[in-house]
Length: 198
Image (cartoon, rainbow, N blue to C red; front, top):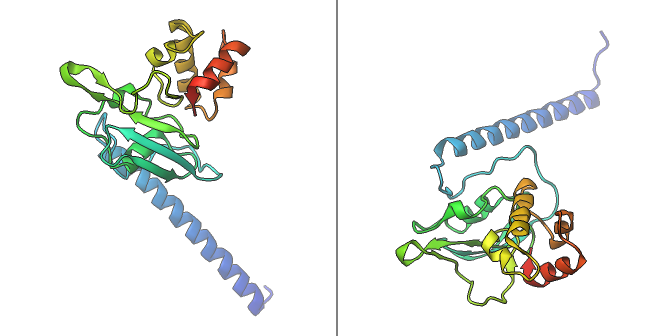
């Protein structure tokens, strides 16, 4: 067997160290995901909880506005591929009066998106912070069927189709993606662009 030169030994050692670091990182990421699933309470966003992901998402960070029934509302920079659950956790988690079941916690965040966490009002009514004006833009990521039904040219059936389409695709990054929904034509797309924000 030929003897290895000093340069070859250094190269092999560097490759072995790199493989060990990659393996350790993968194990740590796997253990972190298992721990977050094991400790998360059902129906609650645990601060710092990781989101389920099939792979790392590349790309730039996204900036989102988290408002409503969260402990620390504000504008946050999140890694690309983050979910609504991650944004709620980053904002200190949901308040006890929050209606987390009213939003899709698994939806992927889009840059510039506003995440509105509704809360229970007096008598069990749903109160949505920031919904002071009917003409205010509606968040595409958290819009309900009732909110979409207020847009001219959108009825309850089309509103339900939009919500279903959004949920099937894990959220939407742009209003323009809605032209794939059956029953939405050019005039309706224009109304949606005027009333929705990503």
